[in-house]
Image: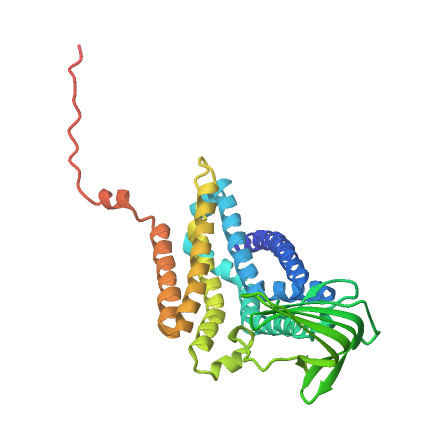
Length: 374
């Protein structure tokens, strides 16, 4: 009882501290990334923190897996370094006896990883993509701030307006520079307004002129107009694009037979299987010699996590491209890591090695030499 409680108590402290540090680091990185997207016009500046929160929520399966892995490696390495493992080994405990308390501590985290990977990940992605698409697919006139030059959604037009109405549908002193069909088109008008015609939105300009200049040759065409209209976007502000696999629910992926859905489903289930294997790998890579620095096993643990996680992502792309089947790759990757972890644990638990093999061979020992005494 003391063995289980002391181990789980130290694991809880280490896991909590590691989780806070990793979440803080990820939030800082996502904040910088989201601010960059907002400066490019891909994200609404008023929704920066909301987009950041959804993004961090989507990365929680990876954060939880890494926190669990680091907590186990750090705790067991500290026990090796302080010779506590020697005490437990001397009392009849082996490495196999650590499996039960480790999984008794890890099972709530594993359930949370499964929920976040199967439910939280697609929901967070759908919310983030919905906000980004809604902001990116606004009409061009809605993107413009009075007194500022602003690029359009496709980066082929530049807008400038002097004043606009509170509803944002009418502007005065409109200037538009566009690149269309190999022509540089400059349009200026005294006023402009947005009107809905059918399922589309149109920008109607009044009392202006239009200059067309070919890019490959010389020449200039000038025309004046009283009313000029150009399409500004759809009424509903959305585009009928197919929802990507990462933003679809797990139930929708199960009913879809496409390779992209199978790859995404294999990644979500693989996050749970990888977290289970990380518990066994942490038990194996945490051994440390008290007389040697602890950087060696920590580097090995980090290398194992990076390789395993990258193989999980590479496998998703391979399954999505149709190179491998989902069941075959998952059996090869996760089943192979599980077998390696169990075999490694068996070798260390039974203390198998070259020295023990050599101990089974008879060795000729010369008789002691006795010298006569005087």
